[in-house]
Amino acid sequence: MSTPDQQSFYDAVGGADTFADLIHRFYQEVAHDELLRPLYPEEDLGPAEVRLRMFFEQYWGGPRTYSEQRGHPRLRMRHVPFRITELERDAWLRCMDVAIASIDDARMSPDRKQQLRTYCEMAAQMLVNTPMGG
Ligand code: HEM
Image (cartoon, rainbow, N blue to C red; front, top):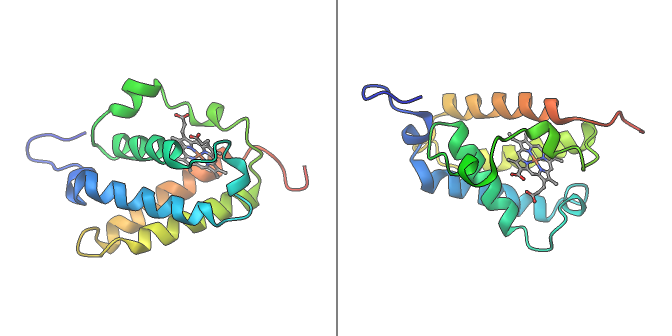
């Protein structure tokens, strides 16, 4: 995505440090969310945190470590094992909103925060795989 005269979103918001803070904050919320926490199979959320961080870094123009380690993202397929209704979607987005808000505006401008939110809303909607009550 980045050409010499066009900085990636990843670089513009502070690169690895910003993404590490963002995704760490996200999992702090997940850890206390009674709907989401039981979905994560491992007791330690650390490995899940690393995978989501690598994915976000890659998507926003940073290092491609995610695909080197995990292959093609295929997010819809990877979420099939989890029951995701609108409730889980909204809980996930709430955690992400808290995480985005925790990043200083000086690092990530309000415009870029909105870009991130819009993307997350689209992606989370795509991952809903169970009708309510189903
Ligand atoms: C993995 C839940 C939305 C990206 C996971 C896992 C769970 C989960 C339980 C397994 C944790 C692990 O990695 O061991 C959910 C729920 C969502 C949601 C309930 C609500 C809609 C999203 C969204 C994205 C995303 C919107 C991306 C924008 C990922 C990635 C992985 C993952 C990259 C790791 C896949 C892998 O390499 O194995 N998710 N997720 N998820 N999720 Fe989600």
